Amino acid sequence: LTREQGKDASSSQNTNGIFISNTNTDSVISVRRCNIIGGSATSSAYYSYGIHISTSNVLLFNNIVTTSSNISGVHSYGFFIENNSIARIYNNTISFKTVASGSYWIGIRCNASQIEITNNIVDIPNLAPSYGIYFTNPITLINLNNNNTYRHRQGEDNSWVLYYNSTYYTWTDYTANDSNLDIDPYFTGTEPDTYQLSESSTSKDAGQNLYSQGITVDIAGNPRPETGSWSIGAYQYQE
Image (cartoon, rainbow, N blue to C red; front, side, top):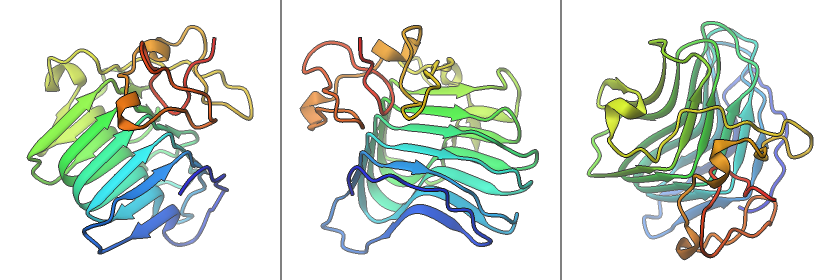
């Protein structure tokens, strides 16, 4: 899937911006350069997913998911990746905009045995229990590098950058790797490219260069540099 504009999709049942279920273990499901403008389930009995994938091998890069809800108790996920052996998640931006007290918000939930999550921005809301990245299953290989999971509720116990193996972490708690950030990404805030990085953003040159992975442009088709610093998130900072 490439370069698709999502739309508001509020519903009285579970909602998915993109849902893919594939039992072919030889396939790699790739979702790239998609903009999912999320609505929400309209009842606390249901769940809201930006991108929901159930398959053995998934690659997500250069996507934006924004979601909002004014309904208390709704569980919302930017990415929900399940039944995986391999998950690679690069240069995405997830932002929860309007939230209601009592809701449950997770940027990336991933159940896989081998996980690589690099260069992603997760903008966690200022209300409700919220988690940037959430793992439940035992993991044999995990690489978390150059991500920015910004918590509006700095220092409060119910807003964490990482949940893994029944334990809640900040980046400092979890790893000595200082490439991961918990800092306001300073989006430009202007339509239609609201999630471009401003000149003052720390994320604009804090990414890991993934050119060798075949990622040569950002969500808008702007080139990513072959050498030198990359931006974190779906947009490459433009001078």
